[in-house]
Image (cartoon, rainbow, N blue to C red; front, side):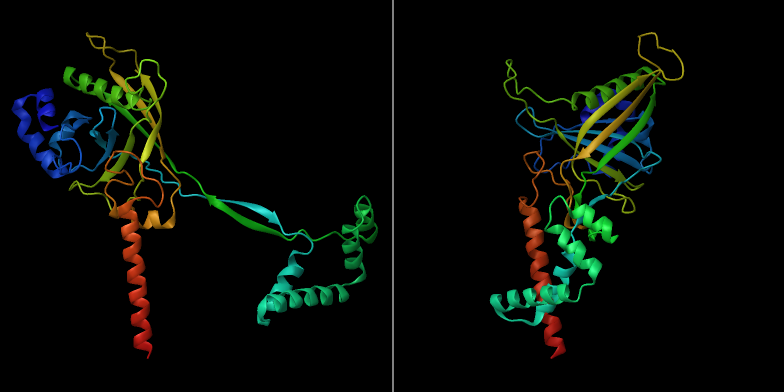
Length: 333
């Protein structure tokens, strides 16, 4: 990677590249192909080792090996992280409240038969104590076609017992936008490489099969926010492994200006990423422990609960919880 960057910008500033790469921790891609490629905008970012930045790394598996393709930008403004749970409503029905009361009443009963008897007795007692309007509403349940009329006459309705029902969490999405202005021929070429890399990895790979019978998933991406020391910024929530959903490109948005070689003065790109799966609280709490964000040694996204590292951490936490509980019990004695 470092050699490729040196070829791009010349040996006269290779020392700055080495310094920047050293602070980023590059060159240590354990388990991955050492021929990783890196691109940056602006070019001067290479000499600004203390500048916070955002890092996009694609795990390209099309060659049969895992190749890392990394792109750095200055950390953008307006970083938005959206954590969302989804809920709908559920109607427990007219007997929902009565059943809840009945089950609570059966709490002291022993055995399955005893609990069933207690639930039945509680339901009968509640019906016996119902008022006239409530009896009419209950009777409406047993008279199809007349229920609405009976309820209207009694000016009562069946209580729908509406409750909020949790249905899950959503797959998180992230959007980033960057404006790249080519102030030199070298920077115009770097912008072209960056633009082509993002566009390229939006698409599936045909596995070299000319008939396109099968397609390989586009690469998984790792996104990291780095502070001035090129460590992950602990103040910004971590992002799990993602797929690049969309790349929108706008050329010369403010003026129709081109360089003499035909390269545009400005290239604006908007990137839309989506995480590879829905996360759990365990994932959120442990994202900082997994440097690759749920990307396996094969460069593919890991499935929930199948990662050996995840299972090992889970086992460690389980053992720790058991140990702490045993300790607490001994101390209480």
